[in-house]
Amino acid sequence: MKQWGRNELVEKVTPTWLIIFRLLTGPMPIMLWIAALIEGVIENFADMGILLGIQFINAGISFYETTKAGNAVAALKASLKPLATVKRDGKWQTVEAGIIVPGDLVKLAAGSAVPADCYVNEGEIEVDQSAMTGESLPVKF
Image (cartoon, rainbow, N blue to C red; front, side, top):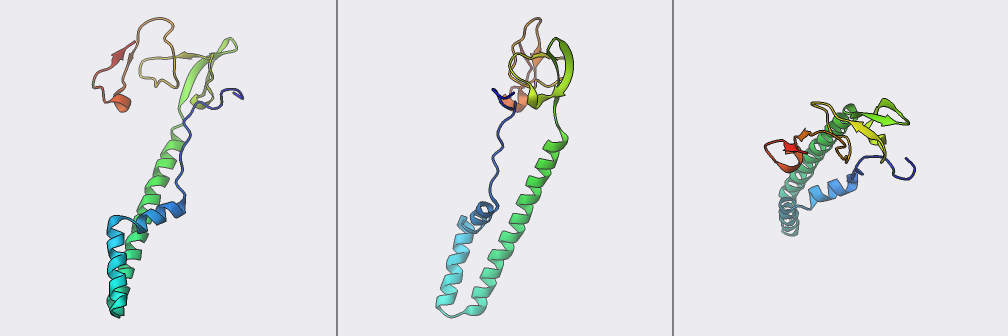
């Protein structure tokens, strides 16, 4: 485990400040900034305030929806910890898929998910790769 690390992809987390920055600098927000600036230059402060209010309300709602969706995905990932049956140290055991290391013998049964990069030692299996490749039919190995 120390040599190979965990059997999982590194998750990229976007900082909060970058999410807010992107919400305030998209094409439509830039047009609102320009319109608010023009309204300020011509001293129409009421319209400028309305435009700035629209800008910040829109960014606030978008930020809320973005973080809510991200939290839902994180909760789903936390609840779906994949397990695998492996032969390690001469005995079969069920372990979390994240701690599988090279040299473990993984047992695959009908309907099970492939928890790591594996070689098929004996027999033939069909793998549904549709989530990864869009392939409509199972692939035989």
